Image (cartoon, rainbow, N blue to C red):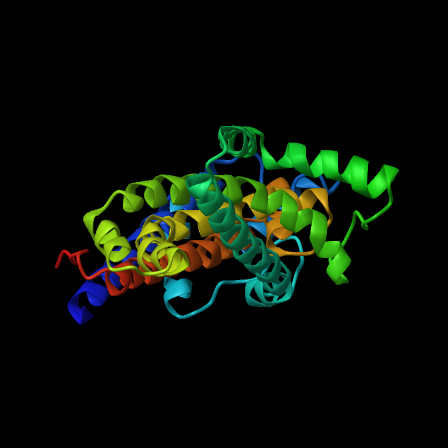
Length: 305
């Protein structure tokens, strides 16, 4: 297990390095530069370019950035002079993390309940309705849900505030918007794996022993049915993190998602790089944790060394 974790950490570092390299060159290939459009003269633009090293060849800019990065320096914002990238992340991460974590827990809870209900229900109508709702949740983009919820529950009914993230009521619409797709995906995974597990010999043996149905369902079947859900938790967290970028912009939530969107619009290279590194490292870490948990839940899953 230790060798496996070390190997996965090494792969994670290499993946993060590739992500940094690709993102760096893509940002530099974007048309324009951070200081255009501010009604500044050509001389001033040249002065800024020299000050921030943008007049250097792109490969020298890359070596310079990686050198500072290895020293733990993410730099400062081009558009907000004197504001460090670390302070921007520290300011926006709590809102994004709390929103993503709440959506993840809600999606896991509702997805598992709906998936189990769909698998054990004897009524074809119930199963058809749940299947149709999960298809709808996967098919419709989350920004469509966000706009619909804002119109219905925010503007017409005035049940929930539409902007910010100050009180628990502010969380309702952004969390529901983020959780719709994961709930549909988890319910489908649980339904498929739960149905398959119900046909296994060990379930038949447990029933033959006279165990209560609830014990068979939740102790013997659900444990194995949750393994695909845990395996997909890494990509799910990646979806919640990247999906929150759009949701934060729609609901005007001051998280790193909104900061990332603004930095791309402003071509703020250092902010784009810093937020990409932060989100990328977080997703790699979550994938590693999920891969370590799966063999612990089911010893039949062998670790490839």
